[in-house]
Image (cartoon, rainbow, N blue to C red; front, side, top):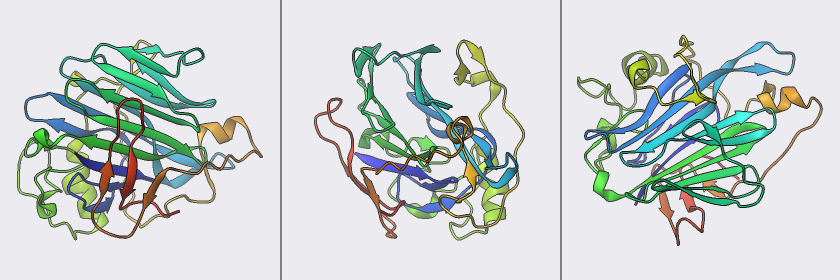
Length: 273
């Protein structure tokens, strides 16, 4: 298995382990495979401060994934926390935290963490809320996908130098490119086509919104950033320990055990504890 991570506003570690920052706004392809066997899409929205003003950062508000023969799984951040939807219908975990659907198992792991494991290919996704924003997204893929992926999580082939490959063709940009070049020459090429849009809210498709151009380096968790959860409960701050331990190294190792009953454990090169 290989793994990629997203954290904060958004900082991304590719499947090959390269770290970069992309503050896009709208809906993007995180991972897609050449044969359309697996797709992961994310929605980034502009963060606001405690006064409701736009902050110079974007955060994830929704992620959606589908394997070729599975149901569509979506995770949204709402004023009450994370919500899972399968084929647009909200999943009720009240009586059962582990629920099976068509070729995918979705789980509420507690501590504001939801996960999904796709049974045909073993792909695993975990979404976690900290500080009332989607702060960590962990994605594990089997090695059978090596050499087939594109998107914001990179060109999975064991070589970090070509991870920033524009979607739709062209040469990879240098991994040490400026934030502006990463944004304009790589990030926005991963904009998700509305004709293939999986993301919904209930049963209504959401249109792709405009892009914000943020090129400055940003803090992982800006202290004044306000999430939908925080706007719904001013004055209350929820601090949740993450099980994903990150370092300043450039590689990431994740060990999965007994999926789907156990969440992903391991280390990645993103957050710090």
